[in-house]
Image (cartoon, rainbow, N blue to C red; front, top):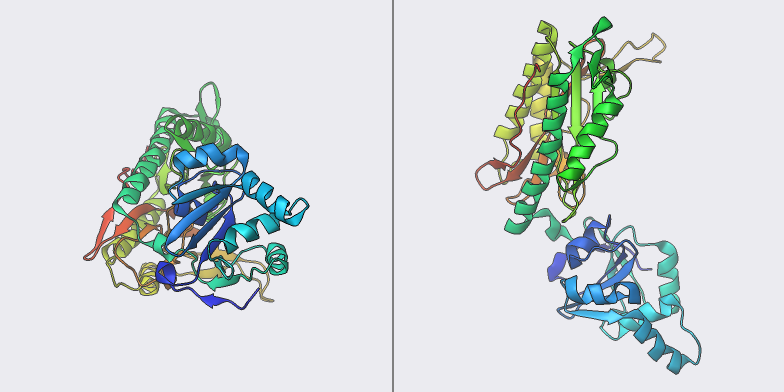
Length: 391
């Protein structure tokens, strides 16, 4: 395996190789449009694209894959066996596929398997991992991709509306514990209702949607567990995938079933103003890092600094308070897709979530998250779900 190569994008002269499944392999799905649960081979060389498929997937690949050529692995193996006088190894079959299409020295993704690279070297194939994104063209969404991402967002919103519906119907019981459907309403029960709705709406539920109440919501990635309570902040963060297309939605709302206190309301409002500040700064050419710093400073100016609280004199203990994660992240065929918002110079056609959050131990957590398409002069918000505080 040669040293890493700078990524010149699709206009480069080097052949480009992916060996991956495409259910979670976003580069492979983007390159081929073909959904398969097991790894297969994709090559882009000499201005043409080709995939190598086993018999299980060959006929379907001929119908569905958006490539110039679909090659049968078993037929290629039979030809190679005649010339070798023995059964070829999988690496030898792939090597023949590559060599006959000008792919002897291909660029590969940075996470290409090291063991496979060594096998290829024995077959005369030398791979070079790229630096950065393997398919940088994935950053800029086409009109069709924006349509599909909007569909994924609508699926996500169906799940959120179900969460609102259940919480509104829940009764406030002793010790402010919410009751619904003849029993205690827990994070787990509400998650089931949300994800069942997402499934019926055409989505693949995340399985770890966030339904975090009260103090649990002070940890941004705490899924939430146990009884939900009235008059406490509840973070609902849903990020399913559209079953038909593989694109993700991502949406967060923060609500209170019952009455919010003045402190809760102020935390919610300041967080919303921080999100509006970030959304208002979006446009092609903007600096994501600068926007993040401005949001962080805005929160600090409004009495929510980012800091460790409760730290002992010896420096031990304590926990984070304020805003201590990113302002947003890329979204597409991956939930957290490159580029990182805080390190990006924004470009028209990129899609980001904008999700500042405030987490104050002893009070609770608030996060507002929406999906935004960057345009030349601003942004277009793809999500349209309302933001109620009290239900």
